[in-house]
Length: 176
Ligand code: RP5
Image (tube, rainbow, N blue to C red):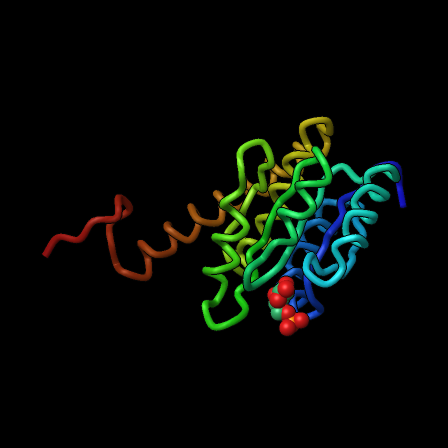
């Protein structure tokens, strides 16, 4: 692993389908990461050992995806003062509402930056991680700004196309 990296943890193999979205964003921004399946319930000692070891090897940020009564991000946050981002996975009968509350409702002094439920949250976990790393990385900051500008340009272009498609005036109006 390089000098600094991001650790992606999941409570179960079943979380990977959602967490792939995080990996894709991190890859696009050229960020190094490693991935581990570690259950906060089934392997609490292994989880603590991993967090301490990862931090010693240069992990600067943890992203944790878990569903149901999701305690993974909390258990990681309890072991480190590195930023922890929690992704509530939309699994189980409550479709991630349970995981959202379990992940976001942390005690004072042990925060978990909680993103949206499911794939959108997994993507935003990648963006948030990139933005945190970009504080000390001007090239990455420029890349993030460029992507936002490109999205903004795309919306403006689509709005202009809509005027044509809907037969509206360039100002966007309709008069009978
Ligand atoms: C959680 O329970 C995992 O994070 C996963 O989202 C959920 C279901 O786990 P499996 O039954 O698929 O192992 O701990």
